Length: 80
Image (tube, rainbow, N blue to C red; front, side, top):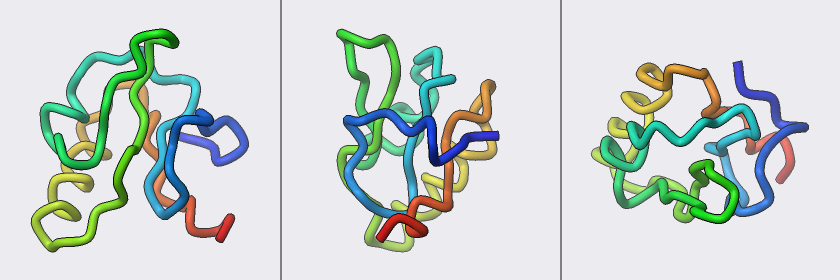
């Protein structure tokens, strides 16, 4: 399970984030390409845009559920 304390610094603020347990398998940005990107230098994904539309939210939920390392958190709004 992703932890907010381990979120990677590239994430934009908001509900969704990726933490440092990410191994960058590519699933999240393949599933939700308008939300996730790869950080090549670090070898992990990050949230570059918080989902706004119903479709983006659906894609994020699919990415969360499919993440093999459970590295996508959904409680990032606690920091706002």
